[in-house]
Image (cartoon, rainbow, N blue to C red):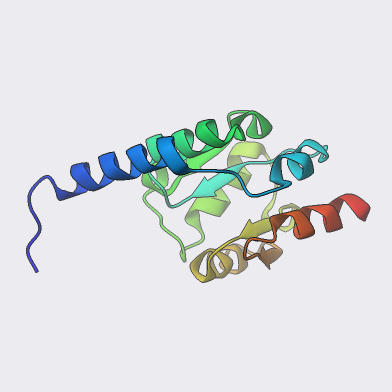
Length: 135
């Protein structure tokens, strides 16, 4: 299969358009995030601009205090642990002090490889977060 030279740019433009028009936050996620009194970050395989756009469109960016990390910045993609280790280092914490909440098997592998407690969620982030609040 041969892709056009501008395939990646066109694809990212389509993703951005789709995000701007259709991306929605899952029910109760904002409520759950607002109830946490802990430092949080996002460590994603997504490009930086896509990560920012997704969090802006959903209104969730404010919960991460600018702590947004992209695998493109560190050139280490999940399932490698680099992006999680980078996020922890930037936040000044050790891996064992983190909790990774992941929505993909490769992310779970990355969290475990980083030596971080890791929880896999499938559209159930509120359950995981509420469990943390109640502890």
